Length: 597
Image (cartoon, rainbow, N blue to C red; front, side, top):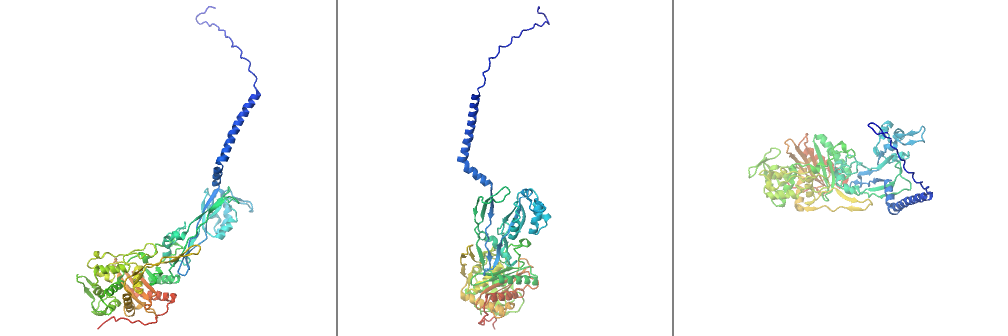
């Protein structure tokens, strides 16, 4: 064919040469290769196993054990708070917090029951009667997806044992000791309370928390799949160290009596509040400190547990502070108990400051004792005006005004005592009869305790001593003592104060069979409508064992301390003397004359 346009020429394809024949596979070689590969793998695995077992075995085993361990805090037993005779005021009881793993409980079955019980509803049917709960309500709490949910707090030990006997392993219990106060409101504002975490939240419980609480321990155990303890499994932990117990100086029965007395008097007089302070002048021990409207620390949400107003609230002391002026004037030799004075109703000082007595009267012929007994402001200014201004300040400070007394309670106020250079022309005289200076009820009562203790001010204190968990006593350091005035001056002032009860404004404070020395007080507050009515006294005056202060804020029935406060003193002080076993006075009083002719 002649090639032409559009003409195809066939091409002859030459086939490739045939491949050489393949050699047959060697089965022995294949086996050898596989054997080598297996040996290499076995060597790698063996090496890894040796490495793990020989070098990491302990670490891996420890991690596996760690993953199976459960931990629980072992709360230390909290120390007790007791009164001076060892009667518990605050103690702890064994309680538990019940919790549930809701996921695990959903899988729980009790095939022993007829019909079989299962899940939250079945568990609730068995547990509810023990907790005195409604099964439906309990079932709702047990149902869910939480691994830890609190079911009930304050579960009793007997209830815990009964529920554990049901062997519902998804139910657990954490020990949570509960703080209880056996006497309710008695000393409630002093004791404070403990929160759910076992920490002191107010009062002495908070102030002394570190020592009362002790040191917690820890329990460690190996658990199974359902969270149960594996019998014979790993166990470890540290034991808790119980806290120390503290003994207070308070007398429980006297504290109760004072509480009842102040609550009753506040109700009778329509006062906004009231306080009673009872001190042992020889030791500085606080025997009772009662605030009206005290709160039960078993139910802290029911009211205010801020502490005692006797150490935190301040007020002008009024006429009770005239004791300081008399002591200073006697100590400086500026007067004697029988120095005569013509005492007017109204008196004007050299700098034209005019002062008045509480009642209008003609000129009175009073001795220094009579000025104190009749609580004359003008007579006090006449006597005290010769005391140098800085010395007036110094004596107020020496008696404890303007500084914390150091009582073992939170929120103690130091009161208000300005520097003498800051006193204006009126204040420098007003401080002589208890104005222009502010004190706490404890400070005011401490002044009289100092006079009763031969002029020695002993630091008021509330803690008598400590006892460790093993019973070892740990007494506290003795209180600080300060000689404020001489014993002769203190004895003279004390005798003058007897006249204030026998012949003066404090007649309602008398206690049958006992000699009483004391002073009334009526002071206007910064608020013109406010009044602090008080009486502070000492008994027996011939051998003082107690100093008692009664303070009422804003009484409506009467503003006079001799009317509203003195009768409460008589009642509470009389009870205290009986409680302490103090014999009646055996020596009649030899009083100074209160008037002259």
